[in-house]
Image 1 (cartoon, rainbow, N blue to C red):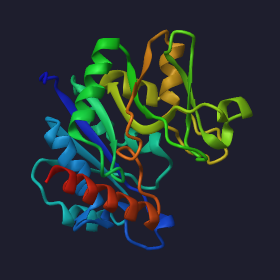
Image 2 (cartoon, helix red, strand yellow):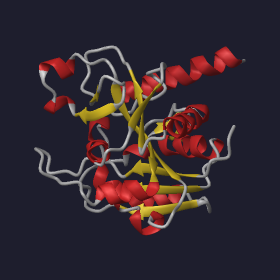
Image 3 (cartoon, one colour):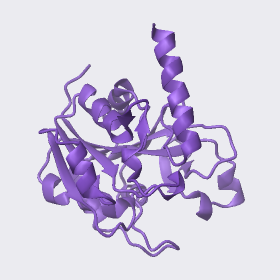
Image 4 (cartoon, rainbow, N blue to C red):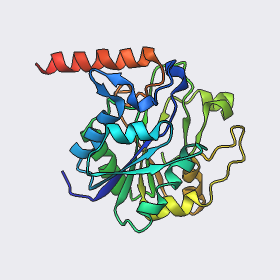
Length: 251
């Protein structure tokens, strides 16, 4: 394991409307622990030297539940998309020289070794952004990874904006990234909200990197359940089954 310095930036501001509850999504409990606890443990076990958590919905409750001294909390209010969420961390990361690994507080099954593999892949490919990708069974509504003939990423197309050919692409964006920190914040300054949702998409940094003539790379993970986001109670139950099966397999 190399000792590359990185900051884990965990997105944990969402409401989780589809969970049929007013509770912040990352506070829903999976096998006795809130979802956010899993992301924090993965970041620590992957040896993040700094952990920044972006909070929004019920931020006071989230902060109170995680009084861990190694965490830096940053508020996102109002919530104007994933790009806007990461922009809020510029205050604490603008001078940071290590890599930034962007994680999702609602992806509890991600393994520390997958984070390390993402970082290694990023360094080997000498990219400005490396996207963790997977190939789930369809049908689904995830953003598709559009590549060039060399296998580098050209852009990430949201499902609702994808044409028929793009919807046929199997490889999807997990929402987890490894990024050169100075590039991340310079790119976010160029992201616009001229889309249907009027949101600032983090995925736009891919096209900005390509426009600047830089390389954007994909790191594919085979186990699509490991990188599954929890958006519904059904997915929460699926994650619980996965954890129980993993535990019995290890026993």
